[in-house]
Length: 365
Image 1 (cartoon, helix red, strand yellow):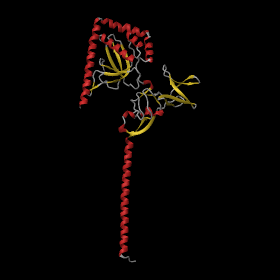
Image 2 (spheres, one colour; image 1 turned 180 degrees about the vertical axis):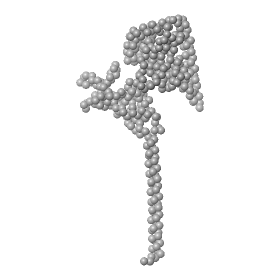
Image 3 (cartoon, rainbow, N blue to C red; image 1 turned 60 degrees about the vertical axis):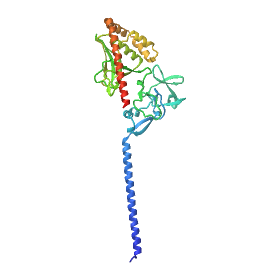
Image 4 (cartoon, one colour; image 1 turned 90 degrees about the vertical axis):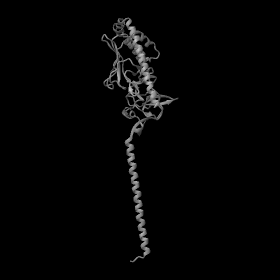
């Protein structure tokens, strides 16, 4: 059947419109597909760049026990977090503070005071800790019942606010929390190993010319001051408690007074596996008296020191070896003290000046 020109024109226009619509639809679908692919690619990249980390869901005070209910796991971009927030994630991932029966320990607040609680047989008890033994207990039927934990508690090293990202530098195991009398001490008169570096664990020892060798302080993490980008060759920083500081002071005086003695550092080869050595250095009677009467020393440290020096062997060692060696030096021993102490003070001042000059140079740049 023949069609007139008007019908052919209308049909051609319709077909052209359909073709244009299909073309536009194809372009739209293509653009949507490209956008979807781009979105998926971006999502995969973000997923690959994300790491799991834990943040606090409440404020925490320094020294406070961390319980599971305080922590929230989040996925964050790994470029925005320090590496030690995730390097030892298993420390927190596998952490659940419970008693041996599996009853979870949690934290509640009253008047801004954090208190540990445990629920046993659907009854809630406040969990306390004895100062003398550091054992945990509850009061049940007006009697003290001790609670054995399934894990060593994690402790906050510093005060932290809600949403703080937890790193291994911010927490410590319960048996390695910082005592109140710990201070950072600087020493520049100790013989150091050639390869000593920040983060190494060390013993500080004193060796006498008669062959005796004593451990003064044991298993301390050392920090090397960095001056203008170069590690100091003769100075170290270590965190010591009050009794350890006094032991070091006594050992330094002994080393100065006895010619041929040496105060030196030894490194732990596998600090994570090796336990701390037991200090063997017998401090002088004057230092012992100071330790026993110094109010800055924690009660626990006081008891340990009294027990340590009630042992007559320590006093005998002191009298038989160290004091006899000092007495043998006579007036020369006093001269040695003055000369070496003067050199130590001069070295300390010079190192400090270099350090401050390096800071000033950095700030100017």
